[in-house]
Image (cartoon, rainbow, N blue to C red):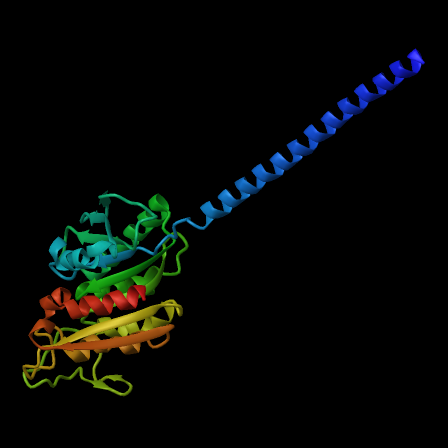
Length: 293
């Protein structure tokens, strides 16, 4: 009888021991599962907060332009955190690019200003300088795509760049182009609003040599490009912004007639004067809507 009791006691001890082991193992599994679920939930929650990368916009002044030419527009566009002033790229007469300012690829709508130290140089030189700028943006800042804005000669420069170099893989892809008061077909203005360069349904009556080159090479412009072409008319009878005729500015439609989208806007009145176009808040609104809406 004593042996039977001892045997039962031993069996009871084993039963309790195994029960404790299984219970501990089950609790560990539940704890591991719960911890994994928490980690998974945390990871998923973090993933939804990743900041998107906005396309930077480059701003280029016109003939004899300075940092103020488009600088004030950039300041206005960046108010209230709608966009972010970023790099300033200065190009020497030798074509060397010097950067100042801060670059944050996660910044909201970065704005990059381009300044030519020789601000009265030729179209050929400025086209080469833009290539140097774009090469710098791609190689040093790893920027894949950009939007570009050009006032006056700056708009002509961008058209030239797009025809000369937009297909090169070591440059960022230009997604959108804004031209403001760009003299695509010369600077002739008629006192009565009439010139030999007036537009017909098929193009200008007369082409300058520069404009003819644009027409000849326009197929090199990316078909994916979106264009906003802005012109001014002060309504003094000259059909111009006092520096560029409507006919010259709007002749851009025949250069960009094969792109993804082309839109032109004409602003009128005193604030549509050539140098006031980039200080016009209605122009600001049009640029903002086109770039970021």
